[in-house]
Every structure is written in structure tokens, then in C-alpha cells.
Amino acid sequence: MPEGHKTHFLARQHTDWFAGQSLKVTSPQGRFRGDARKVSGRVMDRCEAIGKHLFYHFENDRLIHVHLGRYGKYRMHSTPPPAPVGLVRMRWVGQTWSLDLNGPTTCRVIDRQTREEVIGKLGPDPLAEGSPARKKALVWETVRVSGKPIGALVLDQSVVAGVGNIFRAELFFELGLDPRTPGIELGKATFDSLWKSLVKMMRTGLKYGKIITVTAKEAGAPRATLEGRDRFRVYGKASCPRCDRSIETIEIAARKLYWCPGCQG
Ligand SMILES: [Zn+2]
Image (cartoon, rainbow, N blue to C red; front, side):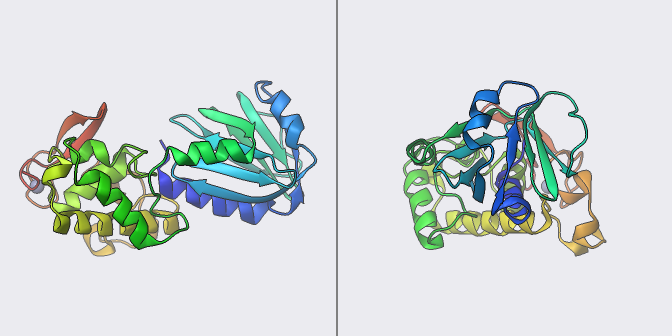
């Protein structure tokens, strides 16, 4: 599932390629057809990412709200686009570029009020606009009184928006933190380190358009060239890069979490 760095990366890309253009919006698959008519032919002003949500602001005060979920995928084409492949929920045809969206969890046209309601349910997004100190303080207010494991709290979008399963695993490994630690036992200094690491990891992900947590020195190659699991320290790995023990998985918040019980005990 795309994590927060990816939605912000897409928002920048889609703003670069489509903002200020009147878009022809259709639904080759049909499920988005009624909504597509509400924005087709209108100018898309900007794209905004908050957590794992994308909001495309149109001139007529309508917005397209997209949540990619586990299977959502965008495909770019030059204009005119080729025949749709698979179940294309939404197709945009712009001046130079066209965009297809297949398999999203959410793809609908909403008004500003509904956007407010969606955002109101989300915790602070480390990559979104707003005071970094304020965001950190808000997350800490929730974490410090919670009896839930920190491994569940960081994945809860109402606590902090944009963190998915890869960031979660890599974050706790970097800190040597046991993901079962309840928020209430975390301590301010540990939380400070956690937040610093999270912001750094998400910014790196946004820069490269993919999650990369190893350093170039650790990887023995420039970071931009890394692909697949070479980009990670612990996620999907067999053995720990620090102590060589076997990496194990535990289920926290219904998702499999990779960790090293040696380094994170
Ligand atoms: Zn280890």
C-alpha cells in the first residue's frame, strides 16, 4: 500500500502535469461516470496530499477524493492515451499527459465540507503543511497517555497520518525500539527520536519517490539506484544487518511487523 511519501510525491507530479488545465474526465469502467461529469471540462487548480488521501481541487469548488488503498494504481500516458487496460475507474486527458487510475479504494467527487470531514479524522501528517512543532506536540499528546503498543499507534491514521507498514518496521528498527512498548511507557526522549526518524524517513521517501531507509554507505551504492528490498534494513529481510540474528515477524494492529528481537528487545 502506498504510504504518505507516495501520496505527496504523486500530488507534486500531478500538480506539475495537470494544474491549470481543463481536463476531460471519464470513467471507462463506468463506476465513476456520474461523478466524472461533475468535473469534466473544468480546470484542476491543484492537487493536495494529506496522509494517504489525495484531493484534486477543481475551479467549481468540487474535489476529486482518491485513496489508493492496497490495489490502487496510476498510469501515465501521453495524450491521446491508448485504449484503457483493465478496469480503469478514472481517466484524465490533459494537454500533454493523460492519467488512468485503476483499483482505488476511494475515487469520488466531493465538496469542501466533505474534505474537512475526511481531514478531521486524521492525525497530523509529517509531510503536510503546518507547524512541525505543533504536529509533533499533537501526536505526543495522544501517544503519552495510550496503553496501546507504539506499533499500533503509529499505524493508526487518526494518531499520525501517512505511516504504513514499511515505515513502521524501519522506524522501530532504526531506534532499536520494541514495537510492543505501550505509548504510556515510551518516554519523551524516545518519542523525540521516533518523530525525528519518522520525519527524516518520510522526507527521504518523498525525495526519491520510494521508501529508502538504508544509507548509501550501508547499501554500498548510491541511494537513488536502490530497488526492492535493498532499500530497507529490516522490512522483508531474513537476517538482521546489525546482529545477524533472524528477523522475525509479529502481528500488531492486524499487520505483520518485521523486527529483530535481538536489537529491539
Ligand atoms: Zn539485530
